[in-house]
Image (cartoon, rainbow, N blue to C red; front, side, top):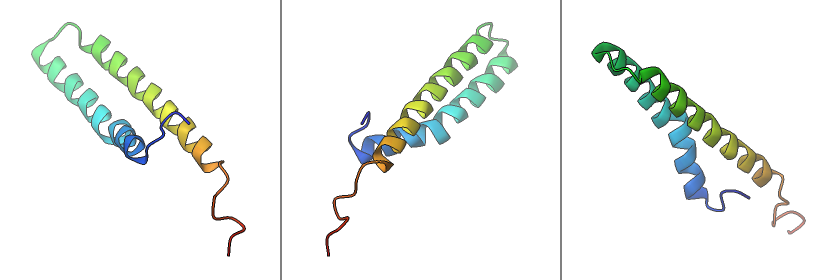
Length: 75
């Protein structure tokens, strides 16, 4: 498993779903407002990183859910 800690997984999940898209939007809006020349490159790079983290978290979640449960068969 890529993430062996539920805490790490939850942090990555929060970053992918909340923080990074918010930061990307903020950079896009502020960068355009101030006329920053590298705004588009920053947004594309941040969004690519967000997709990478989301993919890693998704793969980790699938692998975790496919593991046998230790309590199966116990009464």
